[in-house]
Image (cartoon, rainbow, N blue to C red; front, side):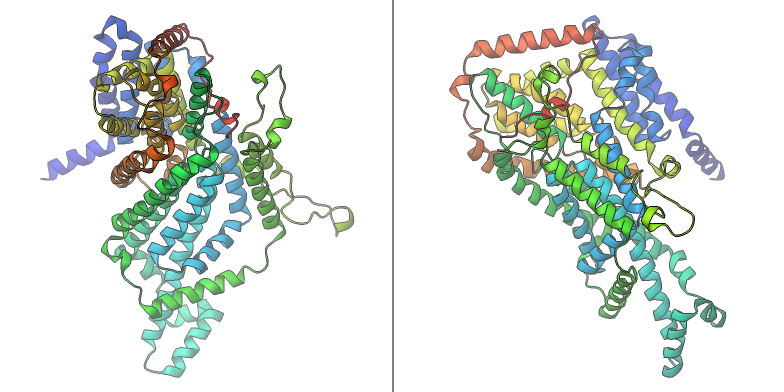
Length: 619
């Protein structure tokens, strides 16, 4: 038995060696024995399989695996290194970076602590209500701002909530222990507790503190970790559910809007059925139902049967009392906190009014007919980076200069670059970039075209069956590719395939866009899961085991939405007359795929850009 145990521990200790070896060797047949017509596709599939195995097993750190495309795709002959490397930092990456910088400002000024305590005061100490508060807040924010930014902003707050709950429970447990220890003399009991608040060291000398016992208790530690996992995943799931509710909430929705608008214009229609308003009417109930069921699932998964159990009234009162005292002890909002609030509110306003429905937004100011096809030159990342760089200039307190001068002049900004270099989760940016690199390689190699052609085999199935297949396939693919890349891959393919088999193209295109938001299982799938994973509370097995049922929930609710009120709203059960000209489909699909494949196979670095979707008119 000792020998087997030693072998087991050796395998665990050396998993970075043998798992890496197996990941590279097992799919090697894709590089040596392939159909000559699928040479590039097979090589690309090899790299994607290797990376999927390495991500799933965590044989090496996940950001390290995300760097594999830089050397693997050039070495197997899929794409030049300069093309793959350029995919790592895109407009979405800059949006993520700006969101992380503003989140750091929240943390640096401790504004997130203030917000977290106010959230605790509002929802109370019941764990399931804390989860609901985290999920609803992120869900609502993701309506109006990018779900990546909403997650990046909420995570520091949730981490502070976790620490607050931990400290409050420890303090309340310590006070209860003192009461129990000294219950033989009521007068002494009161005196000890008052002294505890005034001189903690004095009490510790009289009686050992219970603080260490609270945090070394394995059961209490497990409960805290379970709550932390549930809260972090509540933020990610709230971001996904909220993002799907509006056109601007998540990139796949923007890709869908762009492709549908072009499709309808090409067929002589002035506008498509998908507008800012119609999408909210369709997606809001879908988003709400998915979020509520997801909340209940996470509560059951991490809190178990105790999730609905009422807390002991005395313990609840004690915890809430300490929360209120701590919130009151923060005092009035500071100068730096006020500045960060102004910056954040300004960023939300800039996002909301860059390209709003029915009216011209401020993005129209930055238009040059000779550049970017006459479209706006700014995107959501523009105000995000602008305001985040402003945080390196704004002072953290009233500057000691000019009329405020009192002694030696001094000026300290809110963010310092030395602090940012140490605390910014650079691995998250690399992780997201790795997903973009895989997507670009899939496009260059023609693997995306091959996948699209394979979908034709399902063309004779009933529409509802095909709908379910698309939800499952796209929902799984988005776990190993970024959701914008997945949307760019599938939505144009499904547009052409749908008409060729006599199905309203919106039926499968909407399905595909929604499925891209079901990236619940892996951190590489989308920035919200990557940000949550960066907290350190969540492991990949935790995320996968919680995410798979959540994905099933999302698929089920989506099937209901698309085949009921979605069909009624968008008339998905019939193919419009202007789509029934078969020549449009055949020539458009064949020429599109042929042209795209030829450009990609020549190594052209100009690839579809999601930014074009962000610059469209929503209505």
